[in-house]
Length: 250
Image 1 (cartoon, rainbow, N blue to C red):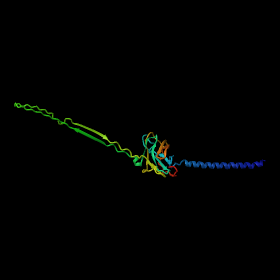
Image 2: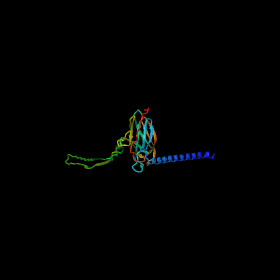
Image 3: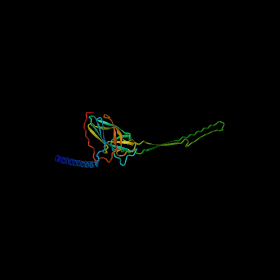
Image 4: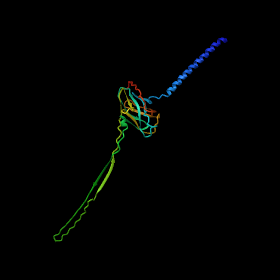
């Protein structure tokens, strides 16, 4: 009885040793993988959203040049808009409570347009008026009589007036919409020649990783509201890849 139990005990002990070794090995692999991925930084920080056949990809606010965006400042978006439908569409409007208004521009140069200072103009007018009168009479009695009156005036009624006005500064050259060709993608905010979506007049300070709601409205795709964040670091070294899969919609 005792002899038969001994081999079984040894087998159980060996089983525990193998199991413990496997757990240690797996634990070491997991720890190594965790340590490796913990130091990795995503190439693109952004969110995705869908409005009908319009896909919004890698939507984020460009990182601030300093520690944050000050209230009243402007910020721009980085994103890719993919029209997966078979009909051309347009981005008509972007709104958010984080800014007084959202402006659409054809390119970076237009978005950084600085209007020239107002040009003052002056106008002046003057008028001069004068009056003179004289009367005379003569009688046949040889006694000439005469009366004369005159009120010469050289500068009577001289008036001068002057006023200065200034012309209003030119408005920034915004666009009403952004065209979205069917079966194609539109990159915004990644290069100077691309369209710009500008959050004009921020209503509060914005810090990296801070989020806020934003709404996109399209001509055919409808509207979509989602949460967007301020980019954590400098712009990505590479642009995100785009997968265009036409849908039956549109």
